[in-house]
Length: 113
Image (cartoon, rainbow, N blue to C red; front, top):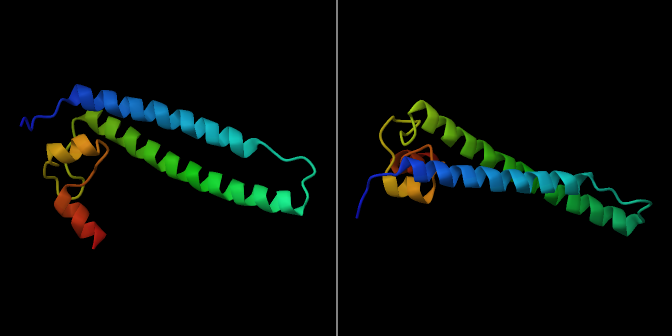
């Protein structure tokens, strides 16, 4: 098994993720801007619940987009693949599975405790 990372492949993956996330964010924002005209109480309650769920989804998508953009910045400045906590290299397998990872396994486990 080759543990060497192909940074070009990682960049392509991150750019695809960024594009897909941006499309989903744009769609969620458009959905949030749609309004119901003269809603009755039931429609109003449903619309409020739906708006809350879409808003939470939008927040999650924007956080993921931020993580992807930060990973691309780390690629650009040469710090990609280094743990932002301890400075050690992040395992290539972890980066292949989660290209936007900022922490090595050890630091991630400590954070989750």
